[in-house]
Image 1: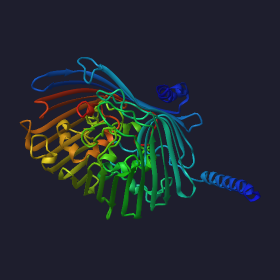
Image 2: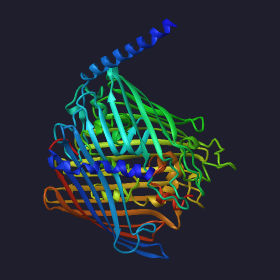
Image 3: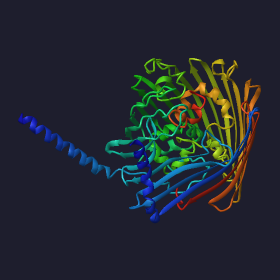
Image 4: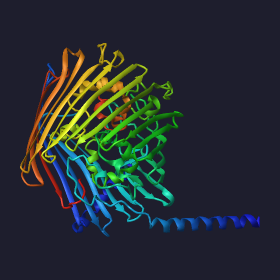
Length: 445
Length: 158
């Protein structure tokens, strides 16, 4: 029954394909990628040749002009050895839905396979989602349907999710000053797993956006897990914008590992300890991180940023700090960037059997786009304070070169080479054919 | 008893009147446009305050809050959680699903290897790095790999 419902909801948008003939604006995005990968672990050499097609379509102004159809998905076929797991072919419908936008009150209805990002809710659902503004600054949204099952968990016959899900958010906005929201999600009872342990996915939460002055902005959310009867997360961000181009931020995050990760079937032997009756016993660790960052748009061509973050866990404390710079030239057709970060982490965060988890991160990139050719270079290097599997660093260099065959059609290729603790040598190649048909001139999509 | 009999229909009438008033008022509430009226340059970090000085009808928030500074991009989850409809005026949903999806076939940075300017997770040899990063901030893993997108994770972590 649940499979039938999933298929039905996912198929609804496809039933409307004939109506596309009258669509005023249709855009199709297609990216075809042929990868060539050669991996050498020292003991085994693999050559992989997977071909992947990413296909998306948006048809707007259907029916009375307020109806639209959207879908996006991918499919892969391995032309040589299997690139992943036991399947030589795979695919997924990321989303596919009909949307009706009302002309007033930001109202809209979506039906099909949808993503929901609303308050504390981040879900993929085969079902329906509705939302609307209400008078006096209030707003309401809701969703419901069948949970989308995608993952095949090792040794299990299910991905650990319940089959049905419902949720929503109620919010209040006081023009330009304040927004308060309460949201929640309720998923039907999670199936029992054989090798892992997980819990029911049910959360309640509140979110806030507060800007008492145009230079000050506070935003964030807290969530509560009724299954564990504990707060699961606080996550807040404070932005200060004292002068044009300058943003100074402070952030605070706190998660109760057990409550936050309660519905996570992974790491069941560590953060989530199963009891003899299957119940999760430990209250779990609390993870905290806080820090600050600043970014400054010095000119239209130069943006610099610096950041610092402190991590506090039961296994120890760690710090991350560094800076980035971005440059733009030739009316933004040429761009470049530099970055450096250092992570200072002790033994608790180290890769076994090391005593230090500290490392440097260096990155440099540049790209140039003309009406005919485009190209990019990207270099990233992680330098470990203590060697990992006898390797001092993990680095990768990528070069990309492409040609615009037409304004909508482009052919490009990437080559990458690197060395790291997992692969003594890692060389990858990729050919990419991109087609972006868009009859609409609006937006920057 | 008679008093009770009168209260129920009176309440129902009051609720109906309130609902009708609300519906009538909703016709006066503005909506965001379906798409940004002017084409924006792909790859340009948008500064909304260049054109929009006041708060946006339909969001009741100053447009300055949505300017795509480096920190906005880094913290965009806070804005998308309550204002994804404003994201949709310029970005297709597929722009989000480059990273945020339930079944990723390719690392976003590999799929978009010709766009090093875009913020993408797990650049470079993250296979090694995740052994450190996962201990530093497990919540950051959970956001994307918690209830989905974890097929590769559970191959080792079980």
